[in-house]
Length: 231
Image (tube, rainbow, N blue to C red; front, side, top):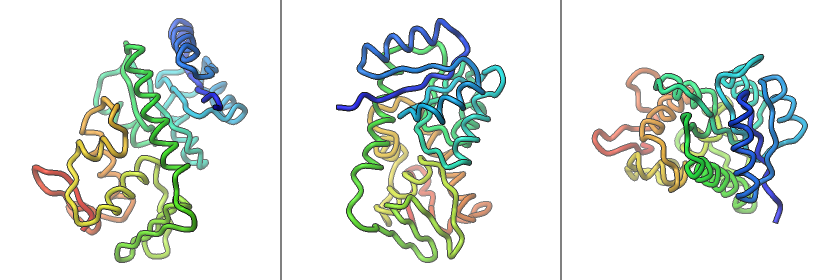
């Protein structure tokens, strides 16, 4: 079995040392970078399976790194590490394409559970696709599962990995109301310990990218008190 490689981009040596020790103890290969510029270089050179990314970094901050990687098409799972507790910080991380976040100080067990859940979901999405092209169509919305490609009409839509997975799961269950907890379990994994607010944030950005404006519910409908469904 190939050992998963995990890169931690963190400027605090004590945190890097603790995380690297526990990654090794849990069967992962851990590599490190102490600032933003070194982190970007390590991502391109080492091609890690997952990135633990601190927000407050010298040189280039975590938001910029996350945004840069997603804009260049890099889908490597990212878990943001932050000492901040403000909701806006979490929302920004998700907006820029992070898959999860964990606030400092964090417990090692929780961190390892988050890593395991994110990697499992990523592997399931990429490795268990059916042969041939699997395309879902909803009016002028087209979702190509195999190519990870979404179109509205002839216009390609640029989605983060989690936005794509969320849209796919909603589309595959078209007409069924899915609760926020169900969406967290299926898209983020049953071990995910984050807030249901995460789902709302992703839905909001999905709607915006699909061309829905204001209270318009052209594709994704809100069922008050219950959850969401594809119309």
